[in-house]
Amino acid sequence: MQLDYDLAFLLIMDSQKTNLQFTNQVANALETKLGEESFSRVFVLVDENTERHCLPIINKSLPENYQLIVIRSGEENKTLATCEIIWQELTSANSDRHALVINLGGGVICDMGGFCARTYKRGIQFWNIPTSLLSQVDASVGGKLGVDFGVFKNHIGMFSEPDMVFIDSIFFKTLPEDEIVSGYAEMVKHALISDNEMFIDLQEESLSSIDWQKWVPKSVAIKKAVVEQDPTEKGLRKILNFGHTVGHAIESYHLDKSNSLKHGEAIAIGMIAETYLSHSKNLLSANDRDNVIQYLLKVFPQQEITQNAIDPIVSLALQDKKNIAGSIKAVLLNAIGEAVIDIEITENDISRSLNYYNQLIK
Ligand SMILES: NC(=O)c1ccc[n+]([C@@H]2O[C@H](COP(=O)([O-])OP(=O)(O)OC[C@H]3O[C@@H](n4cnc5c(N)ncnc54)[C@H](O)[C@@H]3O)[C@@H](O)[C@H]2O)c1
Ligand SMILES: [Zn+2]
Image (cartoon, rainbow, N blue to C red; front, side, top):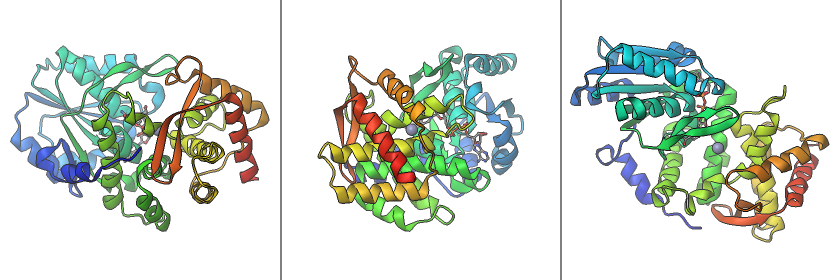
């Protein structure tokens, strides 16, 4: 599938035409935008980490009487119970429908804060200031809002785009390194599914000195182009699942283990497995396979998938909510920068790919 995202790139760089603003002066950008609007009340939602590290960066731009809502960090708090705390804060302050919620944090804060805003009194405005790499390149566009429900991730929610998004890499200065690496996996995925040149260029970069102001907008443009062409995930949008059929199963398997993996770390292993399968299904050349896999092995942490884990991981991949009628449909590559959707893979394919991965890391 070919993706033309140059237009999306031009559009998002023109802040007049989009709700996305890339900036290296987030405080000023926020102050200007707040000056153009009029809200009855401004709320800022943070977790304890973004309160400490990110709030001071924008504090001076907020109205004097803004109200802070602090919740506990972590995916385990992305629940309806936390939503109740947020709704209660909005209610106790007698907020009307002209209030604004500013979500300052990673994907948990942005997904959940947006959901709470859009359901409070049938919907109030919310702006996102994503502070993690993952939330900037992945969660900032596409309009997916919601919370987890028991063991089911993102089970309760809706599609609704934020009214405004400010993206600034200044926040990465305090972001833990493993969070950077995890978010970077989604950036590499964007290159692999749609932009060969970007993949070549990324190989020249090092995570300690990479120019985020250059690469984050490019990565966001790819995601934006995909979701705009297929907002409800009927076809093209599936390419964003590259690495996720196997990767997500690996992530789920390790959730309650001592060696649990961050989302992007698991996706990187998933991308290795699915790149291997792309070649074994005669879609990708051996040369391109080796090129992609060598890079992924170099940049992302390696973790052996034990023999005991292989069958449970295969079962988890079978349960993926994106499968249809018991068959496993994966996104594979037919070139670097070009993905194909709905390729049927078997349980045996998945276990072969995991054994292949294990051999590589020995
Ligand atoms: N809506 C979407 O399309 C979409 C896409 C991808 C992921 N997600 C969701 O996003 C979540 C994962 O996002 P995430 O990785 O940002 O998780 P997160 O919000 O849990 O943030 C990760 C950790 O980094 C901390 N943190 C964030 N910014 C920081 C900063 N600048 N300095 C210091 N610490 C900081 C947070 O407090 C947290 O401990 C998941 O819930 C996932 O479902 C949503
Ligand atoms: Zn992902």
